[in-house]
Length: 64
Image (cartoon, rainbow, N blue to C red; front, side, top):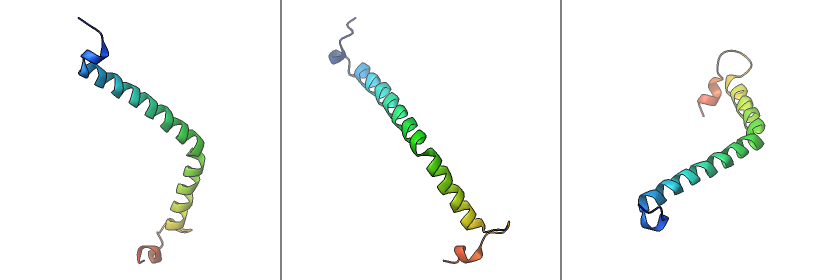
């Protein structure tokens, strides 16, 4: 049995899928690490804006 990648398209597909997944995971983790705190702050500000100061949501924002 040969292990040449050019002779086995299924093996080539599996290797490409594994490498692509690993690269995507690393890039996604780095972006989350770099932009994570800003994204959390933006979500908190958005929730505060929708909720207003009390427990009830602001009806005027829903009427837009």
